[in-house]
Amino acid sequence: MLIHQCIECGALSINRIAADDEPSHIINVFESSLEGHIHDICHPYGITVLHREDVDILYKQLYGGDPLRTLFA
Image 1: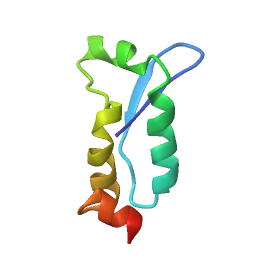
Image 2: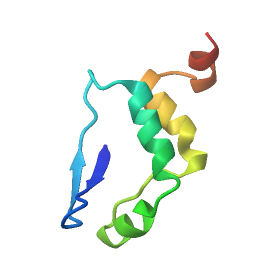
Image 3: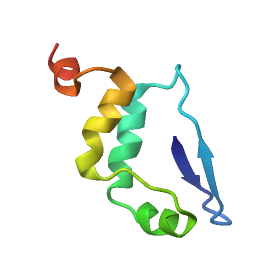
């Protein structure tokens, strides 16, 4: 799932990742979220956001199987 925050009103919306979404773009969004304060914004709503140590989960969900094997295949 991707979490978006409106820059005008601050509202949060959650969108499912689609099969035709570009995995590299999703990875870029993940990496940029590590620098922001989205974790603080989502916590009061009970939304758990991935952290840097969860990168293996992200790769497994995007590519399936062993994330390192996918990267270096």
